[in-house]
Length: 322
Image 1 (cartoon, rainbow, N blue to C red):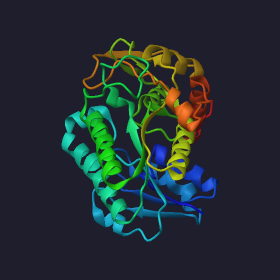
Image 2 (spheres, rainbow, N blue to C red):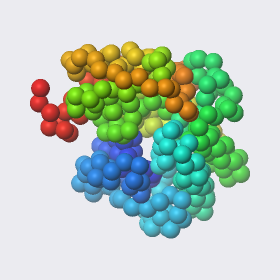
Image 3 (tube, rainbow, N blue to C red):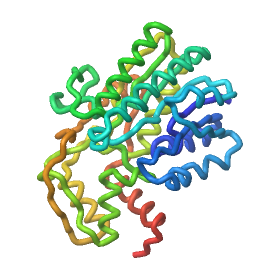
Image 4 (tube, rainbow, N blue to C red):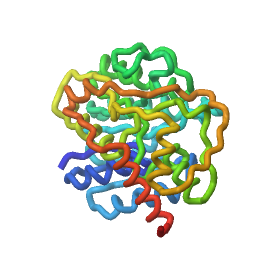
């Protein structure tokens, strides 16, 4: 049974990945600090199914604190690093916190891995690194030297840090640039969750800008499939360092997304417009040809299908009966 360390295991992506790996008979060691960016009880609920498994061992701690990793007794074969301070807009208000967790935390993890002979690493990066000056669709070969938020900067910095450890210490690493992940357990601060929440509370949806920005929304199960494919790839290869987009390659405008959500909830549109906010990129659009070639990655969930799944999950969580 392979032992996989997942940082950020109680979050949206981390908990979904943990459950899937446990279902595939992996041993999973999880770390999370229950960052107060959103309520702890939500993350605890995310972890409940995994905690029932004897193949899951959880450690509570901060990745920027070396003592957190010193608690781990299991022999780790691969690390999937998802833990990070998230959110573009909050990073503008407190960039130092993002540098501490995302950059210093990643360095702390890499140092611990190197000292313990663990050289297989999958890193959760972000499409935010592409900024606003990248031709679409976004290719991994594009120059990403112009981040427009501290969050994006920290993700780019970690990609560079990872290359240093690949070069100096022969780590095998895949940087995965995720594109606007959504689905069951999505963070409450993210657009789709906020929109659905507002609709069922009979409140107006807040739309920033004219609704002409677009995002490449990628369903959580497709993201998890991509991560596991990356984990298998680095486990089987040597001398590997690659950066790979994990997206849906099918962007939709904000106004069209909102219209679709109203259609699926069978509610009357109620929208309040506000000025566009600093740090928001105009478009995300993934070129996934590299993921297809290297990882045999192929997203299989349409936005309509994924939104239906999320809305059904939301209604169950909030005991809503139509």
